Image (tube, rainbow, N blue to C red; front, side):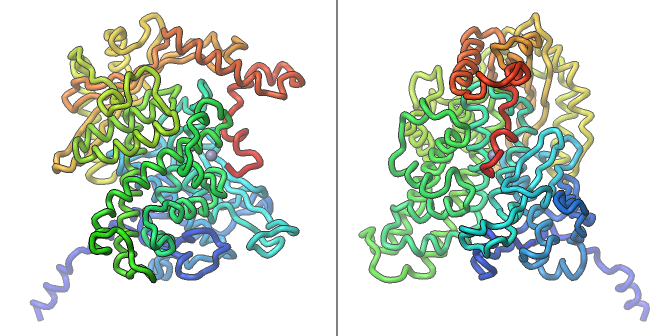
Length: 584
Ligand SMILES: [Zn+2]
């Protein structure tokens, strides 16, 4: 008896599972509840209050049209835990809350993984309001640090696949959720990324948000199977996958835009298209083509095996096993591309981002971590950008070596005066990385004075101006595992400078002229890259003024609008403006 009691007393502790499975609609509710439209995704398991409200995401279901709060779902309810979340339902708002939470958590996971650190919203969770208003769109509101989703009745004349008048919920679209959350994350990582200082800034926001939405969707292998089965006989055709991407409904103009972007990329588009969504779709087309070529090269051996070396598949259905393997490869290639695109962020300048900067950052980040293992994917990406005429300014060729940011050779060391702060930021990063905990952001704030002093002392090498204050806007450690198993640790700091008086100068349209530098250093503080947009650059200043002039020439409102409009006409270009009327 004593033995039994002892055993009972020492019942082993059971760790909570790392993942929480939750059901979502794979496409959108119009497809119904058949198995293809319902998938279960795993998100990080964290303690949740009803809402759901977790450490980084807070769902508040206030129905703005009805002016009332809807009952919040409790995802820790045992009945819900046993069924992988609530089953998909258009009519149960608690499922809507679950879906926005699950998809948002998945986007965060993809950013965490690629960046090698845990992204939070500076201590305050991202707010998600699934039934915020009556309308056909959804958008991120920077001041609210939140995303509001609209709902609307289907068209009574032309309802498509809906019943006329039936409500359509933007919060039930994976791609709309992922797109808007990406806007919030890009803004979190680059706080000046909403300032249209060149023609690419807002287009990059839009294109990048679509890229995350599409490629996150493609990482769910089960949804790729049908598209791959239907593409049978011609696995070299990207039609099926591009079609699938377009069907997600959110991708860049829908209806074949993506397909034609791949079939016949127009190299003049990058020079002539200015509207941010259309321009962003050029970026999406480039990345999609890079993905497709990578997928093709990864399945080449499978196709040879399946065809006895001829490359020509026998008539009839593709064998089930082959479809499964192809879908897995497509999902894996999608994860590669998604990670590659997000990882670029550590190597982007703090502001005034162009597509060319993005290409250079992506190639540098990938080569830094993967070395030769990534040669193929980098070559395909470079080629896809080249076919669209996306050349970074100031590079002599589009070879990988020329595209990478030049390594810093002046032997600068962050550790000289920032040493203690580096130790703190490494420790904090390591604990977040290892234990998935959120720490107070005190360390980064503590480090600011030392960083600013250091930047001032080294201004010339960093592309900063000594006569204008330097603001340290970010300081963190990243932890990534290289293919060799090596843990790659880096310190990244961002510095920004501005000329406040330019805000009142009408030729800047209400924005300030800013400059800034991203510094990437080793864990020992040795500076490896200095990625600068100098405040002192006359070319940059002229380019910004020319961009404002081009916007003015294109702005029909300018001749009628009053002084208020004129004063901040460029500062006004943001998501709300972009998204009005087009659910973009
Ligand atoms: Zn958008």
